Length: 86
Image (tube, rainbow, N blue to C red; front, side, top):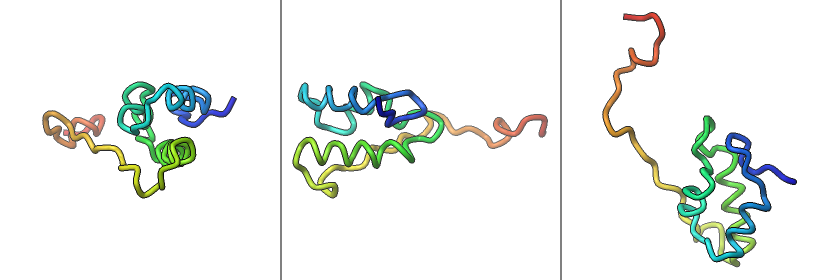
């Protein structure tokens, strides 16, 4: 068993199974498996998943769009992240 997303324990087998079932968009894979939603924010797994998608679908890596960035719903002051500071 090969772990592709260490933050959320997503395996190569899980990704390939969904691709084989017809899920061939990175955004959909992200939502279904929570890829790139852990502490590393996809720095490791997203490039790997793009490579897997390219191999399994026959697309070129450049043809697979990068995931959409999602910004906070409300701005948060930096003080909220710094413990004990006022």
